[in-house]
Image (cartoon, rainbow, N blue to C red; front, top):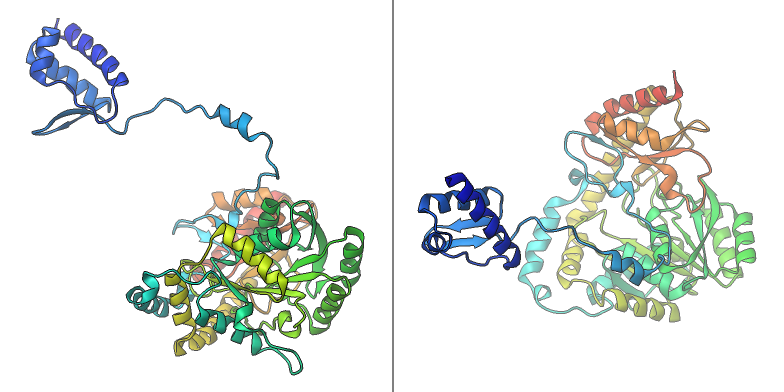
Length: 471
């Protein structure tokens, strides 16, 4: 009898709870006893059942309440399908290079350097000082802190040859990361539906930004020495494009660095076609056996739009970058940037400026180059020993990555899955091609955590490769 009464109370209270707002207070036990003509023991049993089902919660001395967080009915977002219609651009997801990795895997996939390669002491001290200053409570100028603008301009001017006018601080626009800058450039200087030339392969984030801006991407083949000048000229002529996006120094993913002769030829072609070259100097601080020499330093006529980021070299939590652009192009970019972010956190700008102006910054960069070289060489040696099927076309002189060609017809997506199942994360090269891949590639980051695990990681990759090749 008690069981039947308890079940009846549970059923009736469920109906009451379903109609009540989260957090609503249930009637007291005395009221429930009177309402359902049941004993206090039966009512308490019903309440315990509802509590176990997660529908109510008891607060001693206060009462019993409908749980504020309970299992909700499945949401129906079908109306949004009709409202949004077809996607304006192909759906582009974040790269596998952005995946987080647990400590028990060997991670070669990331696009960022490991924490031990960052100037942690400088960053922590800079953030502490910035938090105590005016930057923590005031709105900075839209174009950036004047002192940080001056620093970016000075950095580029140190490479400017005699006879070329160096950039001025007023040419600098500070950004919340270079990804934001790419979006502003493509929207402000190219425009929806217009053509954009890009190296192939190229940085996946630039391809993502171009897709979201609605520009039409046209690939230009690029090798260890840079893009083919004849192909670049033909692409300009056939497409009518007025912009070429490239990474002349330690390109992501290939690690390629343009020769001075190739850089001069590319700049000549860009000028000849009255176009812009977007120079993404993402790896400026990651030289190993060579240093980044910005092409923008040789141009004072506004053809080169230069981007430099501090996010990877200072800290991924300090998303600060800058565009250096001259003439009306800068105003177009400023307009597009203001619509997206208005201004960059003054606190982050002050911290970034503090880090790069400390004497310890240059000391850190010198040590960083040596660390990257030892990691790169260790991974190259390990790959050559355990994965002889992978071909390294050139040894990168800087940057963070190795770009490996696999045998023709090789399934790199399956290799990625097999390696992950064995505890190793790698990046399939398909994400870096703006059109069909020219072949099967994988990208390995030698700046990742636990370099002591590189040989074991290479061994696991080698076993997975052999398994797919049937040998």
